Image (cartoon, rainbow, N blue to C red; front, side, top):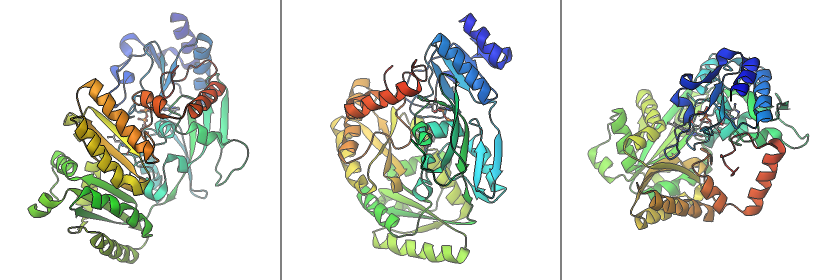
Length: 458
Ligand SMILES: Cc1cc2nc3c(=O)[nH]c(=O)nc-3n(C[C@H](O)[C@H](O)[C@H](O)COP(=O)(O)OP(=O)(O)OC[C@H]3O[C@@H](n4cnc5c(N)ncnc54)[C@H](O)[C@@H]3O)c2cc1C
């Protein structure tokens, strides 16, 4: 290892190669609840694409496994390094290189966080519309996981927003894909291949991102319903209404109680409503014009009432912001309540009601609890799974994933497969598809050094 450390120090400078006591435990884990942390042998902190390339050349020559790391907020164990591996950390590549107001594009280094980009775009009345629950997440991590979040129902996920990338291949070459372009039809779309590849194909060193005007007016409506089924059936109707909600989330009754309690929020709902409501729909609308927003909010209210809402609450700004934040923090509330895992299956949105019914049955059969909330407009169901026994939980998860796939869904809508869902992914995915993915992996990474235990087996 000392040869490798010397070679890495030649590339990034000795100060930027951390070993021994200087490797903090943070580099060994992400936020997945069910993966084992591994402390890497070394952490390198490059400052440029050229340095990333140099690090990868060293790693490739010595066949050392490499894990790219953003903010470590991932929920699938994809940023957990190999025990003897190397971590490339992007804390020094954290510059917003350009906000191009004519082309509505931002060019960023991978270590820029969503919070930093949001602040920079707000100054131009623009927005980068990917808002996963954790704004400390890095853009590199967002690209690698194809992050979604609450606003995907309106704007789409990371995949929709990335126009181009600069990326270092594991062999050390640096490629550029796409650009400040709204369209491209020039060979295979390598940008899209790298997005969502969980650090297994290439290391992202720069991203060109689509920006949008930031509408000044927002209205948030909370609609309690008697049953989860009614909420789930309402979702496709709200999407089809043409109101283009910015946020369309379902929150089950228990989860609503837990997240509002955890954040100390009192929404002023009467006790009889709270006692009757088994689930809530949280809808946020946005508009460039206050009058237009009022009309849309009225229309939304009429629609939700027709769909069976017990009552409607147009939340004032502060309550709305705090409730959305509490929903974003649902992961921490579930973790504090002792959840053993969190999953984020995705199904066609019209199948959510059916999936929630089936998942409750599966959980009951396994003597377990599953409850949660989700990006309902995207068919993305987030379930906190309460089952401490590893074997029972594993059988339960397999059935929950299988059930989503039978409804035309997938194992993960946004958190990725990582390490934590790999065995289910490999068991349940068509072998021809997995074999093709392996060939793509070998084409990018012939030595198999990039995140070798993530997504596919080494
Ligand atoms: C409270 C909470 C709420 C969340 N809510 C959401 C949500 O609503 N929607 C959602 O999609 N996610 C959500 N997440 C998950 C997480 O925030 C996202 O997965 C995010 O994209 C991870 O970014 P990161 O910088 O933390 O990446 P990391 O965890 O550091 O890494 C994630 C993956 O990206 C790879 N990677 C990182 N940087 C690079 C790079 N430069 N090049 C190549 N690969 C790289 C890593 O190797 C790893 O495979 C939530 C997490 C928390 C803790």
